Length: 446
Image 1 (cartoon, helix red, strand yellow):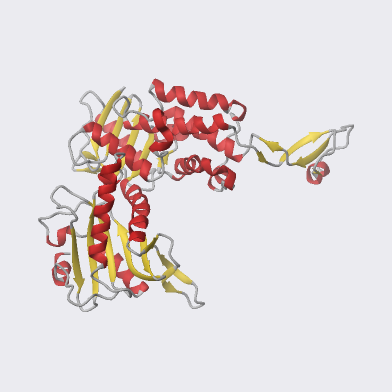
Image 2: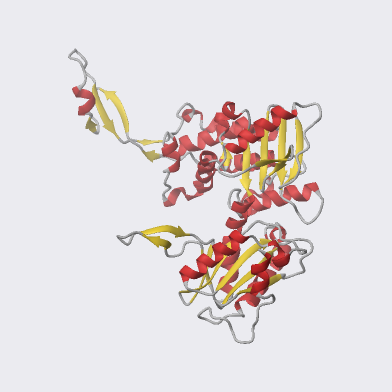
């Protein structure tokens, strides 16, 4: 199988022997079926979007990697797996132990498939979950309740069996059907012997469930009890397969392509939730991504419209003092205000207005030209508000090397400490702390 490896937002050089127009058309149709742009066409050339993962078209596999701080391909693969693990889509390394997949032996998609397969295998070996689930059968023995609807529609005759409904404890239920469907879907994408062997063993344990495909509503509404929380990651993978963050391989014939694609914005935002919560707690802040609902508008009856959803809200003594947003965007040191987007500034001002606070922070990935603990503060003229740009060394923060990760987390706390020292407990600016750059410069540049 031919594998092409590119980086996020990079140019895709298709092989000369391939039908370029057909491949481009297939990839663009694949992108159109996703809820986020996976590829874009620019001056006749095809580029990857701000995504990572892999797409397969026939015998061609396109792997998209995040950019690490080096040109080492193996390091980029490791970064991808660490990022997925930190965002919660792969089991923590401590749970995989010796079964951890070596990225040098597999391409990123196969590594992800194998890790998910190993977690599934570990779960089914411990025991297939059993649930009480209603079934409808014809029985000579009265159990549960008579199904009078079906009974009333039966033609007169000599039948002795009654249509009944009862709720036995069964190992064919919504959770096992979902797990089996995930394994079958991933098997369609797997090409390496390692991935296929692991997934085949999972399906062997779930042989009794095969043929019982779950409905879309059943997967989306799947609720786990406190005894089933170990299956939460698998349930999340199933829901991703449905909502488009993965493209469902069971419908591959419609788009002529299938794969597993993650938007980097989504991974960055999820990863920062945990990191900011831990760092904020050490600085006396409570950081949440589920704040009390705020709306930009209300109708005549008082019902809220256009709910605001900042990525993070920082609270001090239960009072909001700062809002934050994670943006997977590359800043430009040679551009005024570092190339901050208008839309991001407008969005942050909307948050600050509605929350009635004066501090907003945009978290961006750290680039090579940024020094350690890089951050900048802008003033919004006449408002008393500040907009902070804070760099985040994502690769080091999700590293599997504990010392590297701990130092990166300390650096993040230091930056947050520097930012929060510019305002008081109620969020108002501290006298004598002036923005690094004037707000007029920011406004003129965008």
